[in-house]
Amino acid sequence: MNAEAVLKKAEAWRLSSRLFTHIKEKAIESLLLFAALTSVAITVGIVGVLVYESVGFFRHVSLWEFVTDRQWTPLFSEPHYGILPLISGTLVTTAVALGVAVPMGSLIAIYLSEYASRGVREAIKPALELLSAVPTVVYGYFALLFVTPALQKLWPALPGFNMLSAGLVIGIMIVPYVSSVSEDAMRAVPVHLREGAFALGATRMQTALRVVFPSALSGITAAYVLGISRAIGETMVVAIAAGMQPTLTWNPLEPAATMTAYIVQVSLGDLPHGSVGYQTIFATGLTLLVMTLVFNIAGHVLKKRYRHVY
Amino acid sequence: MSTDRERIRQRVIQRRRRDRLFAFAGLAVMVVASLVLLSLIGQLVYEGMGRVSWQFLTSYPSRFASQAGILSAWIGTILVMLLTALTAIPLGLGAAIYLEEYAPKNWMTDLIEINITNLAGVPSIVYGLMALGLLVYEFHLGQSFLTAGLTLAMLILPMVIIATREALRAVPPQIREAAFALGATKWQTVRDHVVPYSMGGILTGMILALSRAVGETAPLITVGALSFIAFLPHPPLTVEFPFLSTQWLFDAFTVMPIQMFNWVSRPQEEFHTNAAAAGVILLVMTLAMNGLAITVRARYRRRIHW
Image (cartoon, rainbow over all chains, first blue to last red):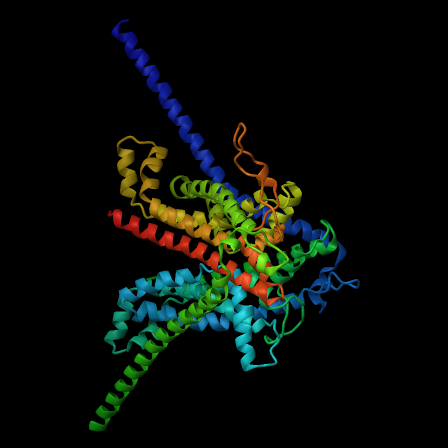
């Protein structure tokens, strides 16, 4: 073999190995793209299933009845299909939860971001993360067996299942979400704004409430919205502690079912696939999804409106 | 003149006092929140600890509270988690690597990103409904381990992707540029440099996502978890060739949170004690995973200095 042939061979080998590398790179890239697209497939699956089954449901029940009837008794011999009782249950528990989580979460966030030393913050943050690690079914146990009996000592007339204790426990549960997102938002406010306030003689509290908090409002709004959609979608606490009877009431001391609790209740039973009863949980699920979506979009809009550019 | 000064001084003192009061309120709220939670957990441990025993861990559920146990539940939890991890980790890692390292700036990338953000906000029970309609009835997987594992995998996928992307983003671009300058291909750069350097963050995210899946109850109730399972699934390992069996994938399943939910929702006191005991074990599981995540994060953080 002369030198030229060897060179040619080497060149050919180099080219083919390059081609091979190129093909391999492309194949890997397509695989990774495939993985990324599965998330889109999940969304398509969720929307597809919910819409498909809901269409079946609305063939039996008019949309008008669904949004105006004041009773939700799909499994009775004389069925009523009004979603309002489930929505009122969801809104009441969410409102109670926010009543706990918003003030507590905001105060904790302000304290951690404006007052706490580095050491305290480093110790508290992982502890707050641990709070959110407690499974929701355990929170449900707390609500039913610890919080309700405790509240009954204050109001002996309080029923064993009620929305108040479920809402209170959900509130405690979402405090870490609210506080950690708001704290991040407040810490992102540039130091020179604080320094300006201090230079004008403001106390830390005035700086925190009148300078930092308004500047971070977009992020804090996002934290509240995150809390709201968590509370709306929360299932186990309400299924365990708030009772399962759909009741149209705005009184948190009463038992009532939320949308999520209704889905759980039906799933525990044995409804035949394809029946109207089976389809009700998908119509409920679709309503739930739309509600959380509305809140998420509202959050984005608010965030944009209050965005400050530094 | 002096009265003005006096007034100002008064006001400064008052504001300082208010400031301290406010700081105290923040601290107090934090302490109260932690105390409430600690006391709840303490009470759970107090109620349940007496019931935690070898018998409790090795018995099937029963009509008699004192004979009931969580054998099928904890084995179920481990098997479901195995399936969830095997599905969600490769998919999540792949998706995150694509979005961080490969994705061009176009409408498809935007679509995927918006989609992942929105998926993270979908209530978990909605995933259960989707799995019920799609996996159970459309794909005929039944109310099985496979369905449960896939459901939870879909649920935690956005979490895994978001955490992994954050970890990948923390690797400075100079690392990639250096690899490219030495002639490495994109995949070689990712495999040999970017992923190993961000391993701490990736592992932390995955453990946290899995610990979330361990406690997840609602979507599994929707796909039809049974709470009274007095048998174990077919063993995944067999004595005959090929030593692996897939039969267990299609067995009926239960998991720890479902078992606990079943016991909580019964009226009898004795079952509530069982629920507390199951809750203690569930808490130990999730807190241990979280502790592990925190340790992993701290360890990797110490090792890498850019």
